[in-house]
Amino acid sequence: MKICISQTQSEKGNIQKNIKNHLRFIERAVKYKANLIIFPELSITNYEPQLGKALATKVEDKLFNPFQEVSNQNGIVIGVGMPTMATNGINISLLIFQPNKEREVYSKQLLHEDELPYFVNGDTQIIFTIKGKKIAFGICYETLQEEHFVNAIKNGADVYIASVAKPQNGINKANEHFPKMAKTYSTPVLMSNCVGACDDFMSVGQSGFWNAKGESVSRLDATNQGILIFDTETDQSDKEQLTIEIGTLADLDVLFQMYKTAKEALEDDNIYQWTNNYPTRSIIENDLKDGVLYVLKNNNKIIGAINISEDQEPEYKSVKWQFNDNKVLVIHRLVVHPTSQSKGFAKLLMDFAEDYAKQNNFTSIRLDAYSQNGRIVAFYKNRDYFIRGEIFFLERKYPFYGMEKEIT
Image 1 (cartoon, rainbow, N blue to C red):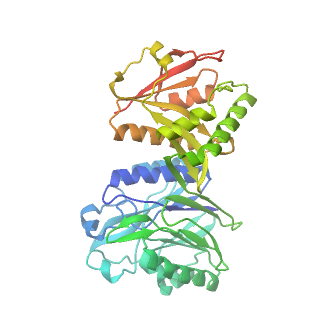
Image 2: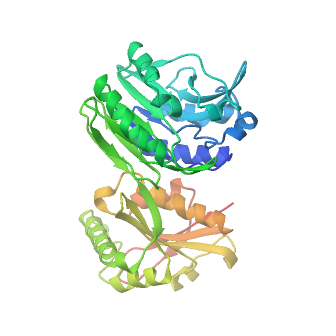
Image 3: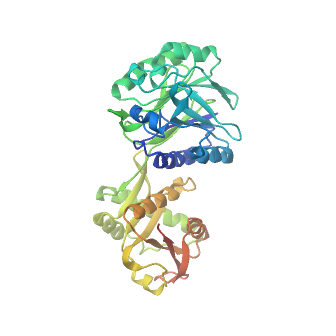
């Protein structure tokens, strides 16, 4: 069984934006064939006790339909953090979405004294059986109480998962407590923590897991969002912490080599999209100097890049574009290293570009796609880019398609 722990940064009270962010991480977990993904405490609203009453809802709320749909389509169990309505008040809960099953809720049973003015205790320890493994959940404060762990073991738990929102002093306590519990009860422990501002503290990530010997196997850093995947059968892990940022001249050598390797991989497939004169080292260097080349990093290693600017090639004038020229964003030189392709990274880069366009009030995006690269043309068509005409560049036998998408 593969369990995915997500380390996310949520925005205070912004439920729709946080759900969208969750769905992106679930999509990443599906790429790794995870059977279960768990998010940090109150991940949908951010950990904000004073907003609990105003934002509380029920698991049946249609707001959460996207999670159920993704669960059904991909066979993955999803646990997200949300305040829920109870008969005697508001609970801190994990909403559990299972493929083609009714939604369930696990509510925090042991509250910290600071939470008592806002929330009430849950009363049941629920054990979920997933792929033959019995999974117990705990939420933040209660996970550091041995009685909660012991109760989970008595109920037959094979794995214990802590969904938390912890500052550094809380993480220090977790680093002492969880390995002790794991070793004492021969039970793996996984911890999902958030990053960024929460209530009146800063949450510091460092999500990780400890095997049944109490050994720390892997963890994420203290500042970036990401996922950690644990295979219960092998004790092996994968982790992914993706960042997209403006490239610097210090990245030039790595970027040029990546473009060169991608060009060679295309040619191995008889796709002569790029030439010895494009993209050159000087073109990439100018992109970096102009601050228009964004790099995708996984665990601080560059695996992709995209040029986002308002610069249109002179050849674009031959295309009958549909949308006005006044506020147009242009995409050039999208690349993913061949060893990282077919993992959804090109989609992430395009998601980033389209979010950038929306945030900066662009009306449309334009790009060119090589007509002989059927895979990339289909990729853009699936994202609602439409062919507006053909563009001919030097040293290419076949045309590129001028493609355009409206941004609303």
